Structure formats: C-alpha cells, structure tokens
Length: 388
Ligand SMILES: *Cc1c(COP(=O)(O)O)cnc(C)c1O
Image 1: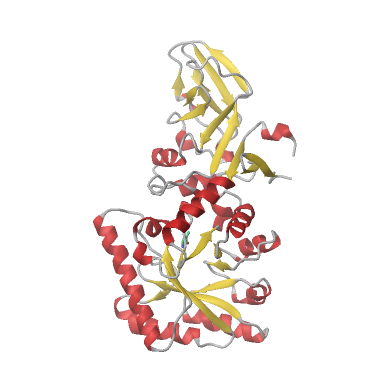
Image 2: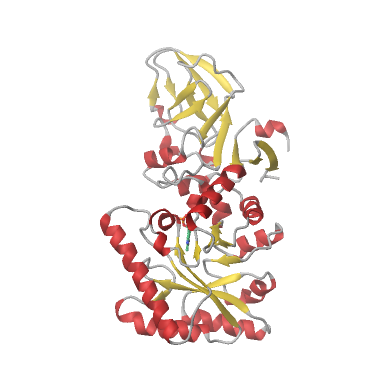
C-alpha cells in the first residue's frame, strides 16, 4: 500500500484492545461459560477476518455473522472456528453451509423442513441453532402467550427432522442494555419465557448443549443469564454505554490529517450552504475526510476533532470528501499533522450521542475506501486497502 494513501484518512483496529476486551469478558463469565464473538457487518466495521483471527488465537469458542457471504469470507480468510449465521440463508444454499461447516439459525418450522429436505438431498447433516422469539419480535419461533404450546411443539418437531443436528438454542433481548426498570422487567420476562421453553422442551426429551441469550447489555447486567455461552458484539469493540464500567477499550480509531491550512478574513462563509460565518480572522484546516468515508454529515458544526494540541471544532458542513476545522487556537498544528475523529481520545459514543444514534451505526459506516490498519503490540501488523 502506498503511504500516500495512509496520509489521507484511515481507520486503525487495535487488536491489543480487542484482546483486552475479550479477556475482561472472559474474567467476568468464568471458565464454565463459552464465548461467542459477534463479527457480523465486517465486525461492526473493524475487519471481520482480522478480528476473527485474533479471537481464534485468544481461544474464543464461536463466531456469529449475519449471512452466508460473511461466513464464507471468514472461511476463505482461514478461520476454522465454529460460525453461526444469525440471519436468513436460502435453503438452496444448504449444501454450501455443510461444505463450509457453518451453523445455521432456524427460526420457524417451515424453514426447518426446507433445510432438512435440502440436507437429506445432499446426504449431509446441517448443524442448527433454534431461535426463539421471546419479545424481540424479529426472527424466531413464536412462544409468547397463546403461542407457547404450539411454539414448543414446532421447535421439538424441527429438532427431530432428519439431516439436522440441533446443537443450540437462543433468544435475543430487545432492551437488555437499558437500566430503565420497565426495560429490566421486560428483559427478565424474556429470560423467564426462554427458561420455560427450555423446560418444556426438556420434558419432551429435547435438550441442547448450547443455550445462549446474553448480548453485551446482558453481559454487563445479568450474570444469571449467561447460560452456556455469551454472545456480545459491541462490548468486544470496547464502545457503548457499558464499556467504561466493564473497563473496555475502544478498538477503532478513525484518523485523518490536515491537508491544507488557510487563514480567512472575518465575514467569510465556510462550506456548502454557508452555515458557518467567520466572526474574526480564522485559521482553517481542511481535512481529507467526509461523509463518503463515514463521517456523518449530521456532525457538521457540532463536534471537534482531536489534534495533539487540543480540540479543533468542525466549521460548516461536512462535505462528501472534505471537512473544515478551526485551528485558530492551535497555531502549533501544521499541514500533515494527524487528527482523530473518534477512538481512544474521543469516544465514538460522544459522536453517536450528538447524532442521536448508537455507536454501532458509526463504526459500521466507516466506508470501504477507508484503508484499515491492524495494530498489534503497538505496531502495524497488517494493512488492508479495500479499493484495489
Ligand atoms: C448483533 C447481535 C448480537 C450482539 O449484540 P450487541 O448489542 O452488539 O452485544 C447478539 N445476538 C444477536 C442475535 C445479534 O443480532
């Protein structure tokens, strides 16, 4: 990779921070509970293959992705660990699932039947995890209220189908990351319902080696819900509301640099739409990063970027490829100096808060034209330029 590319805008994934976050979770869950790392959506933008490799070397037990394409990317990247697909895979692809040794979520009897038929047709066995809808109202066997008996029966029938090996069963919480008492009650109700489903299945002779439900919110709040395996995503990446309490470190740092500096007279309009008007002589730095890199335009005029000498407020609208910042109070910042958009010094959570969204959306949004650097022991261990 040309270093000139790296002198524009890049994202660093700190694999030492990732290892730290993994070990923090490990310490919390104890030796009897397994760890599934959620690496869907390119590991929330952090680089799925590199994150998965690190987790594999650290001794994690399982990975989860959202689709067959994501699972295949990991297998082609040399990952041998068990991988669970959380989302939909068309039954025509069962042969691929078996060939790549990938575990598929089953969320309804009709899907189980289609997967079973396809597995039998290719004389293979498909490993599956049953998804139970206890209140997320997304994927999963319906079991709430009047659906309980029918749901349990449909799960039992699914597990008994030929060609399927029901290794696991799971549910997903809708509000486990919220401390509001109503949300805590809702989470406990979801968990109790999941437990009752497991009991009813056990009474029918159906048990599962891997029962799991704890996402990051539950990892932080509900040790009684760890069961056989936890399933965190955002906590692995060291961001989100619970990160400080769990002593987690942000894995991603988004960086750019100062490409140009200009001094404007008072009364100058800066950028599209003339939303910023200089009141005095203003020393402005132009950064080669914009919303096409994943810097949300909604942050225009609302945050600062971090320089080695202090914060530099964004002036005017963030453009597709460029952003202007105020360097008037930072005379020691020069062309070529690095700036941090978010990361260790300025948490991505702060930007998410300004935007009224969650940090997940910002790390996922770092676009494919942004090269990734993977840091290990403080050094650049790997680079990936995604536009080639
Ligand atoms: C994304 C996802 C997770 C991880 O959620 P976090 O809030 O990032 O911990 C866990 N389970 C399922 C089913 C998911 O889709």
